[in-house]
Image 1 (cartoon, rainbow, N blue to C red):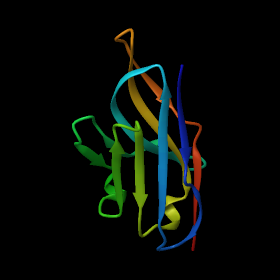
Image 2 (image 1 turned 120 degrees about the horizontal axis):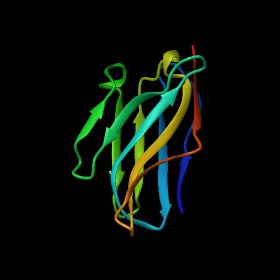
Image 3 (image 1 turned 60 degrees about the vertical axis):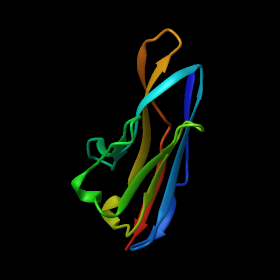
Length: 120
């Protein structure tokens, strides 16, 4: 069984910063991509940022230049540094990981989500 545990959400004023963390644990052979998605009320879940095992990253246009994704492979942890936050960044943020198990099969796992609220 694989678990993704997120932390770091909260309430912040416009222009503030938050750092999200997501740690993976369980019967993991390796992890390919890790990323963050978000979902605001009444909206579809959208990709925020993604990082693959080689370190390449991609970001949603709306967060480029403000958010930075990084990962610690030894700790199987992905981080999302969010700066210059805006009210439209308010959403539930969900960690996602493409995990290869010892069976050599790859599965997608999701965290439980952490709320980010940006006040104006």
